[in-house]
Length: 261
Image (cartoon, rainbow, N blue to C red; front, side, top):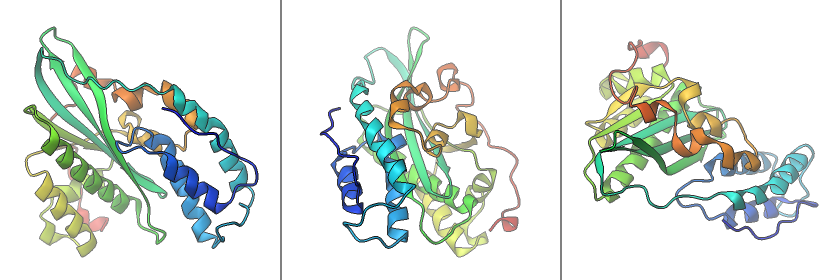
């Protein structure tokens, strides 16, 4: 990936948007770093800055550090070949997570070969900045599940190979409880999103993946671009995918959704 020279001196809101817009990343491989920039831009809108106003400190310092290290993404190399002719079965593995600032979804292709080996490859990532109006973390995690369902549906429709399974993961037991509840038993905000997920992912398995095993948890840590190339969890998913553990099965015990809606 090549990046044009950037000027970290005297940054303005116009420059922040310009930098974000020039980073063309349709599959979301740079989601770890771009989400951080989008959240920063939202903070500028909240402060009602004009386009050519110089960024206030400490936002300016954070942006300068981000731009200075952004050159590191040129070291990123992405393998285009994700399947060979000797595969036995393939599984889509998706992960969703959220914080107060953003919610995300990432999808991996888990391929089992005749040599008893497993290869896991990142396929796509999507992110959304959380609304300015405060929403509870469980509801944001449910929004992440919707985003994941939409992303998986698009990937599934574009794949030419037959899938053995689709397994989706979240670290929110509350969101899992909602997804396993009839939509007409839930409040409107939750019901609308649950019904959308249930419609898109009717025959998929949802499981609980603790935060340390969830690649999307990395996005929420506000990592520097220099960290991107070394994060195996991001590029290849959690290690259990290589051992076919937790790839299917029921989620945790369901919780009373009325306590959290």
